[in-house]
Every structure is written in structure tokens, then in C-alpha cells.
Image 1 (cartoon, rainbow, N blue to C red):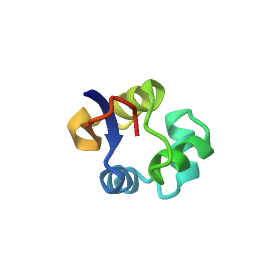
Image 2: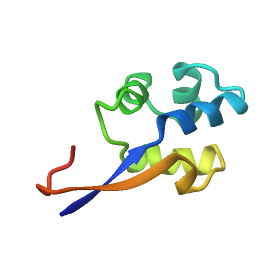
Image 3: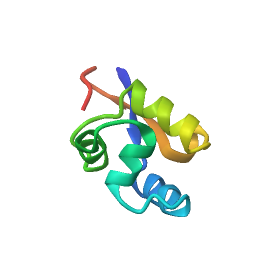
Image 4: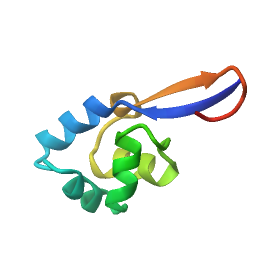
Length: 79
């Protein structure tokens, strides 16, 4: 079994809105990542990588559990 990190989309959107980041563009710019990357992660098409995780924690001043969750897969492959 392999673990992977998933984003809590609703939580990130609420936190972003509370900090004045009301669009994916604003969120991406604040985090220093591409808007397309934020879109894929929020849409569930891509798991968040180290860059997004680290930027979210440091630039939004949140704890890991506020925005992310750890899950597993039976096959050992990332979903």
C-alpha cells in the first residue's frame, strides 16, 4: 500500500477567499505556481506535489491538516 497526499479543495478555497485570493489565478500567483497546475490539483486531475504543499503551508500560514489529507491505494499506484 502506498500513501499519497490529496488536497481538501473546499478548505483551500475557503482559506484563499478569507485571505483575499478569490480566483485560481490569484491563488496560483500568491503561491508562485502556474495557474494550470492549481487548476489540475483543485479539479482532482493531479495530486499536489512538494512545491504546492510547501507553498500552501508557508504562504497561506496554515497547517498541513487544514488543507491536505493522506490517503492510500491498494495497488500501490498514485491515483
